[in-house]
Image 1 (cartoon, one colour):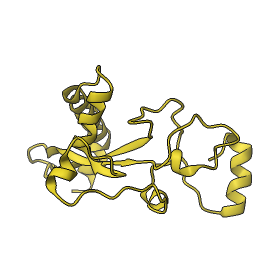
Image 2 (cartoon, helix red, strand yellow):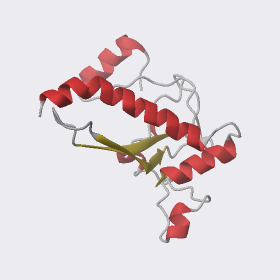
Image 3 (cartoon, helix red, strand yellow):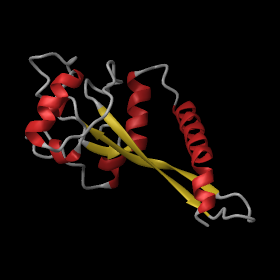
Image 4 (tube, one colour):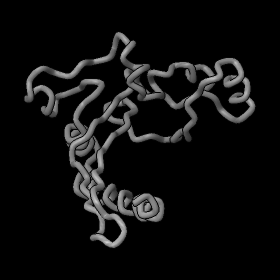
Length: 161
């Protein structure tokens, strides 16, 4: 992790490979851990002259968690990647990485604290930790993001048919 372009230039010249993303300064945490969510969208059909495409948002997905408790980044902890980055390729090396349970009850139970867990479990846990978190409002907001993203992509999608 780096702050500013000057540090980035020094870091990239030494390693040649990098992941570049905007860092969220006050991330939503679950149990003190940073996490990300993966959701899947099916887009089928919709070529020129046909009906609009069928768009389906899958309500299940994946939540990936850091293995170290989040601390606001500073010069002393910026190298603690497992508290700042949710990448599986990094966190799987941690002795704190938790594998998912074996049974459906363990996997989909609200007690699941694994480092990779079903999205629906994560959403229920968020609703438990944050009383103002509304799961259905979350899905509605994601649906709007999907619709807007596909609207922006429509000219490209239509030109390829």
